[in-house]
Length: 223
Image 1 (tube, helix red, strand yellow):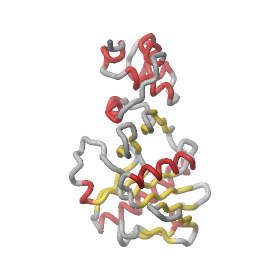
Image 2 (cartoon, helix red, strand yellow):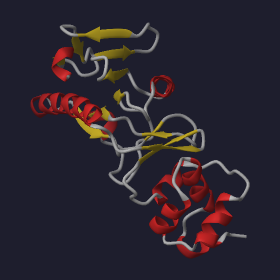
Image 3 (cartoon, one colour):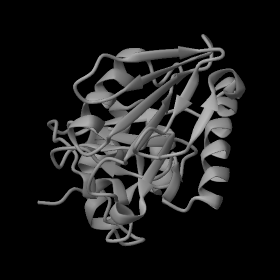
Image 4 (cartoon, one colour):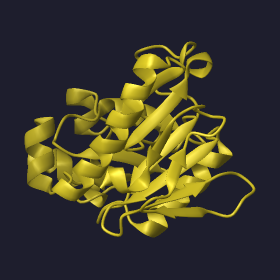
């Protein structure tokens, strides 16, 4: 039998419970999803049920970004200046390059990529997808695989251990390069399948290699 939340709004009770586990207060759930408090309390008190990617389509705008990992929501808080600067600088560099070299498309953090089983959906801070892989995906769909290049910027929400889990998932599901930008330490770590991570700093040059041929940027210019 469907819970009140399902009956009144079409929002699965498991999504409400997942939001609460991810850190969203009951009062905020009530306000954002326009539900009576008792319906929300009933949902979060039910037995645990993992979320699926399709549940993510029911999320409403609450000024946070969400990812799905093994059926659990990860709630990403609004970023600080340092994170935003690092994200925008690498995105601008790639965007300018693609204007002259239209090999594919650039996507920012709200776009979801399925990485593995049906209970994972990640949203890299910046993503590059080649034209050949981008074209078959509908505009109203999540990407069914990882981007060619996934870029993650470390933050209090996006910690080193979490980023390394994401790196493994990206590389196992179609990514050819993953770049992890640490703005505080002013360095970029480059991950590829079958090789040790490479740490770049200062005058080192970050290259798109054969994934985004011709793209280069001096690491110091990202900070």
